[in-house]
Structures are given as C-alpha cells and as structure tokens.
Amino acid sequence: MPRLFTGLEIPPEIGRTLSTYRGGLPGARWIDPENYHITLRFIGDVDDRTAQDLFSVLGERRQRDPITVTIEGLDSFGGGRPRAVFARATATEALSDLQSEQERLVRRVGLPPEKRKFTPHVTLARLRDASALAVADYFAARAPFQKLTFTAPRFVLFSSRDSVGGGPYVVEAAYPLE
Image 1 (cartoon, helix red, strand yellow):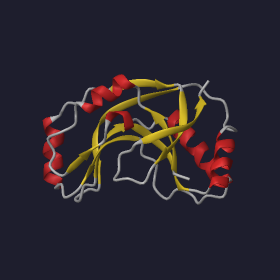
Image 2 (cartoon, rainbow, N blue to C red; image 1 turned 30 degrees about the vertical axis):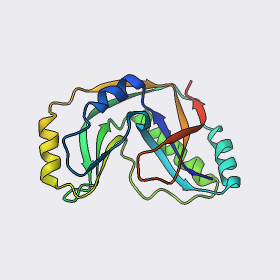
Image 3 (cartoon, one colour; image 1 turned 180 degrees about the horizontal axis):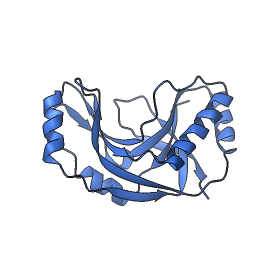
Image 4 (cartoon, rainbow, N blue to C red; image 1 turned 45 degrees about the horizontal axis):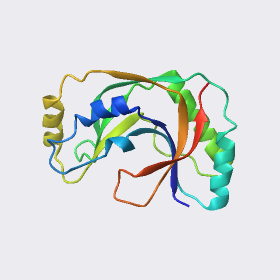
C-alpha cells in the first residue's frame, strides 16, 4: 500500500496564485501546483488491512460545515537550516478541530500519535543547501503577501508513491464537509 495522509485540496485558482512564488531561491525543489495541499494527518506506509480500516473510520467523522481557509503569508521550516518554504494558513478553530478529530480517528485504528505540532500550510518548495539569508531575501522580495481565502468542501485521503518529495498525490477517498 502506498504512503497515506489526509488533507485539504487547494483549488486550482489558489494554486495558480501560489505558483507565482516559484523561483528565485537557490537549492529549492519546487512542488508542482497540482500537488499543493494542506496536510491534516500524515499516516505513512500501512498494510492493506490498516488502509481499509482507515477508509472506514474516516467516514465516521462528525458532520461539520465546509471550512474557510485563509493563506496568510510565506514562512519556512528549519530555522537556521531551512528545509522547506511554505504558504502559512491561519490555524482557525474549525481547521484545528478537524485535524484533532482525524488524529483521534487514526489512533483508533492503532496508529501511533503524531509527534509534530499541527501547522497548517501549503509546501511550496523543499530546500537543499539553502541558507537562512537566501530564504530571508526570498521572503523580502515577495512582500507583502496578499491573503488568499477559499472554502474547502471536503477533506481527502491522499496516497503518494515513494519519490523525491512533492507528489504525485492521488485522491484515494473523499469525505464531504456538509
């Protein structure tokens, strides 16, 4: 079974706007816009039985309204040794609640808890040998960031093949927010 994770899809028009931030940063491997997403819960490689349990348990989520997502700026992971550039999404109560629910559901099928703090974001590039100064210059050249807002009508279970970061991602199942 492929590597699995849950997430929110990025609408094509938002993806096109985010793709304008590609380029101008040495050491960056840019993610293709069709692979932009907000990860809610990374699951990882699982066997077929666990995958089937996940398909089922994610369908047991509580009903909720579609979620409004605002992408508010550019940021990076890694501090003095940056490893990714991303577009930061506002951590609203609705988004955090959806992510927390998925954490509980995934743990119900026996998977270990996520160790990383949830930081809603869209990865734009993975970095290799990029300096903190180069990343700061990249951000300064792209300021100010114009906020982007969309409504997510569903979350999905994505799969990815073992590759060098950034997709391709496949929607294995979709769960409407209604």
